[in-house]
Image 1 (cartoon, rainbow, N blue to C red):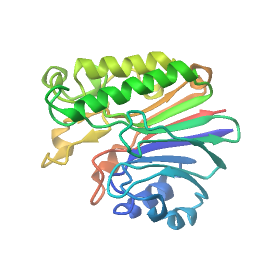
Image 2: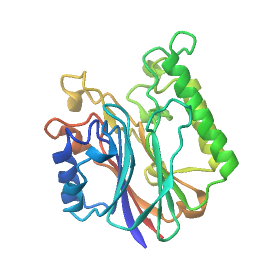
Image 3: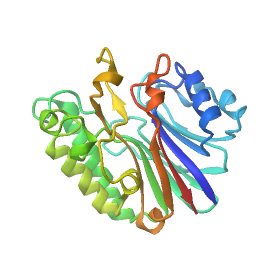
Image 4: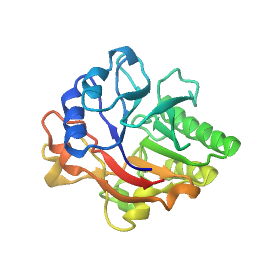
Length: 262
């Protein structure tokens, strides 16, 4: 089975239904994982996506916040979800393909603005979430698995526009990177995007606050596609669709793609 998978923080699937449809029509990924859907599951516009050939969906939702969904042209079965930091948030869902590959779609908490858990409860929640994900990987030893999503951390120096300037900015602080690396190590995860594109500046997010995001190009790579070692070599053709950030009324994230020959 060969399939192309994309992950995209859509920042409201109902508000940006037309953008999702445009991506599905133009790029035709076999599987699209969405984060920050901001919708109860029953209000996700599934009929629109089904009309485009995406007949399967597994999702976890809540009103106005968070929410994750996996849309697929290929049969999926719901493989559950975890509330890793006991926050009561819809931040993880998993689905299993007919070939036995499990896809985990995650939306890690952003962590607020102050990188200090004593001063900012949201930052503590983010670190706890990553720790619980790490512990889950250690206990489960995932195999034939793909983990994607907005992990809200840009781990490498070339994953941000200015490494030194962002060392004290949430999403690139050393403690966050250490927690993300511990999660990667626990599952043996391979960063597929960086496997395919090993060098150079690479971003998937540009702030709404920038009056000209494209010219300023102060981006961060917050969105990831990982795979377990047993299938990582089957992945190829990674890309970030930067142009989508320039569509009308866009999400501040661009979709990330990879293809798997399994």
